[in-house]
Image 1 (spheres, helix red, strand yellow):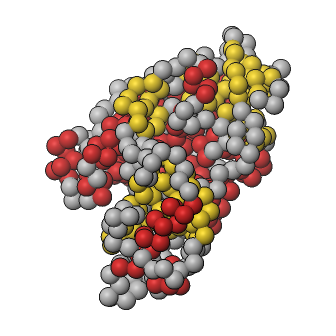
Image 2: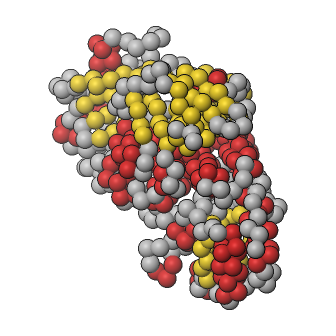
Image 3: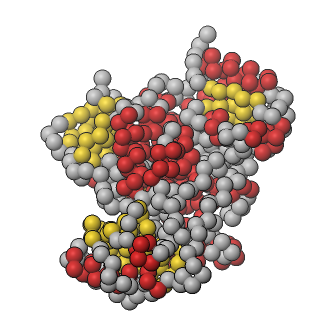
Length: 516
C-alpha cells in the first residue's frame, strides 16, 4: 500500500485547499512546503463568489467570513497620498455588498492570503491531511502502480498520485518534464511592502484600495487587516531593498510624517504569464501557479488555482474509491487547461488596458478586443470534455453571467434559493452526483435511485417545484445530471429512462453499473 493516497508539493493557499477538498471527500494527503512556516504576506486579496462556493461546500464559509477585511470606508480612491484623499464629504460609510443574483455567496470584503491560509491549514489537518513545513520534494518517479516522492528530509514516500502546487517556478513541473507556453515575465520589479500603521486613527477614514500618485511611491495601497497595509510600488533595483528605502516609500504614500510605521516584510515580485503545456503527466497533476501564472489585474490567479484544486479533488476521490476509471482524470487537463487559456488571455488584455476590468460600462471596448466581463471569467465559462455528455454550446454572452448559466451541459448549475430558504440549488449537488428533475419528474427520481443502487454510488435525486425548475430552465419532465463540482454533466428532455442515466454516468466516470 502507498504511504499516502496523495502527496501535495506546496503548502501555500492552493496546496492547502487541495488537501481540504480531498479531505472533504475522505482522501487524506501529505502536504510538504519548503518554507519553514506559512507566509505572513497577504499576496492576493480577492475571492470571487464562485470560489466562496467551494468553501461553502466544505463547511468553511463562516470561518472565511471571520477573516475577511471589510472596507473601512469607500472601496477605492485615487490620490497623491493617503493624506490627500478627498474627504470633504465626511467619512464615506461602507456600502454592504448586494446579494449576488447568480450565487449563494457574496464577498464580504478582501481576503488576504495569509488570513485564508490561517483557515485552510487547521481545516486541512482536521480533514486528515499531514502538513509538513521546511521540507520540499526533490524527485518524483512513477510507474503504472504508484509514484515515489523523494523529500529533502531524506525520506522517500509512495503515493497513488502527486499534485504539484509549488508555484510559478514549480520544481515538480520541471521533474515531470512539462514545458510552458507564454511571454514569461512581463512587468517591472514591484515591491510588496507589508507594514503596520494607524491610518484610520490619523485620517478618520481610509478606502480599502487607494491608487497612490506620489512620484516616490506610485502604486496601490491596500488595507489587509487591523492597522495592516500593503504598498505595491515599483522597485528601483533588483532584489530586496534596505528597510530605509521601503520606509521612505511608505511615508511618501501615507503623506504624513507623524504616523508611526513598522515594516513587517518586503516581497519583490514581477508579473509573470506562462501556462504549462500539460496539466497531467501520468500520476502527477499541476494546480495553481505551477499550472498557470497570470498577471494580477482581475484577481484571476488565486481564484483559478482554487478552481483547479476543486476540480481535481472530486475526480481523484472517485478514482481512489473505485467509482471512476482513469479516463476521468484526463478530463482534469481537458477542462482546466482550456480555462487557463481563457484566463491567460483575459489577464493580458487587462494588463494592457486596465479600464477593461474596472469599468463595467466598457462593454463595447471589451467586445472589440475579445475581453470578457470579470465575473464571466470566474463563473461563466463552460467545460467541454469527456466528463460532459452531449454537445457543449458556446456561452451566449461574455457580459451577462445569468444568461450564460442557463442550465446547458458544461455550465455551472444556476443558483436559485429553494422556497425562500437558505438552501441553494447548488447545495443539492454539492460533493456528489445529483439528478434534479422537473415538477413532474418522479419517474426520473426513481430512475436515479435504481441506477445508484446498481452502481453502488451516492447519487442524490431531487424533484424540484415549478419555481425552482423554471430557474433551471427545466420543463416538467426534464432532468439534469449535475456533477459533484456543481457543473451540469448531462441534460435530458425525454421521458425517464434508467438506461440513459446509466449511460451518461458510465461515459463520465468510465465505469458502468455492476453486473447483476
